[in-house]
Amino acid sequence: MLRKLLLAATAVAAMSVGATAQEITEFRIGVLGGENAQDRLASNECLRSYVQDLLGVETKIFTPADYDGVIQGLLGGSIDLAWLGASGYAKTYLTDPEAVDVVLVKTNLDGSFSYHSIGFARKDSGITSLADMKGKKFGFGDPNSTSGYLIPSIEIPQQTGASMENGAYFGEVVFTGGHEQTIVAVKNGDVDGGVTWADGQGEWIDGYNSGALRKAVDAGLVDMNDLVEIWRSKPIPEGPVVLRRALPADVKEKVTQLLKDLHGKDPECAYNVAAGETAGFAPITHDAYESIIAVRKAKSN
Image (cartoon, rainbow, N blue to C red):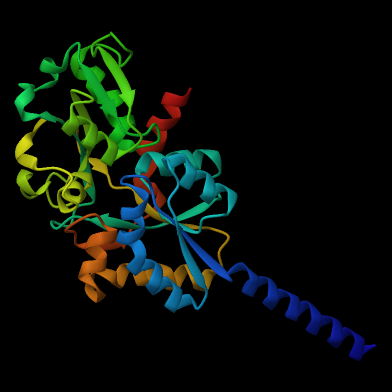
């Protein structure tokens, strides 16, 4: 009888080990659609390689066409790691509070972890403020973007006294699909003005220190001399790096530590992953996003 119990216990233990091993036979990194898929893959290839070496399992990058693709991947268990915007995290949390763990946040060179939604237009358009945008075509990025939609959709009406509906203040309001698309749309004159994200630190000519404008400058997509800032939001909490909660604890610990050490280990890789010059990734908790979650919840009601 004792022998049978021992054999049964051994079998259960073997099944448990097998189940854990099966969970990490692959690791999947989701990257939000702030730039085209090819550039997202290139910017994060160094991270993919580091994670693969660290965990000893095949590691893949997924670049869904929109923000919701990453959110649904985390909720459905097909994505293990992602750097979300605050609004994207709010949607993830409100949909399933148990889906992910908040682990890290990107910090600026001054140690802060906030950024801004930046409104901008072509310099030769003569547009220098929101007042000049009245009756004109305004471009948002993605409905699940914090700086590309949520915050400007709240703060801009507070300043203009009108809603974001077509014709209420702006002649037309459109979604471009992402930050890079908005920058290109303004540059090409497809929209008169738009919003994107930046830390707001450093020089305008560089696209600031980090953010979508900096990435666009680095990629040669835009010359900041051709653009002008027309609006800036209040500081927004930088979105969190999250890990799927169901991952084994040791996997989460190893990947979190890798990201914490990335800035010191490989500054070029950290620059690419964090969209510019930063002080690296630092620990943060869910509590930092309670205000954004409340805003997102209020707008959905």
